[in-house]
Length: 110
Image 1 (spheres, rainbow, N blue to C red):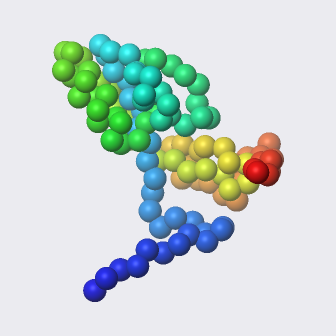
Image 2: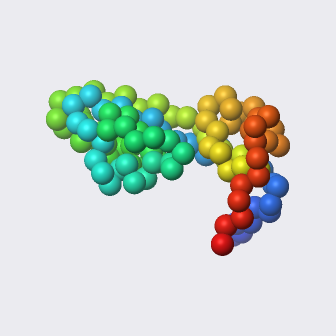
């Protein structure tokens, strides 16, 4: 039996969790191609970066090839529907309709 993909309607929660990986290599710096993949909400840091799973695996393999021990931490994330702010870990688990008292609607995108 063939399954159809369900389209997520506005205001509807995802049926699955989404993950980011905090990567902290020991011997190498995070390459520029990986820094492009990090969420725009986070600052640039050449020693640690939030990445999708496939990129985290590549950085870990490169660091281990250089003799380092790379730390990779899997973390759940979601975005606030009101302001678009990225919420991670406990914030993502506890998220209500808005991310907090200072949550403001984001500007309309053109």
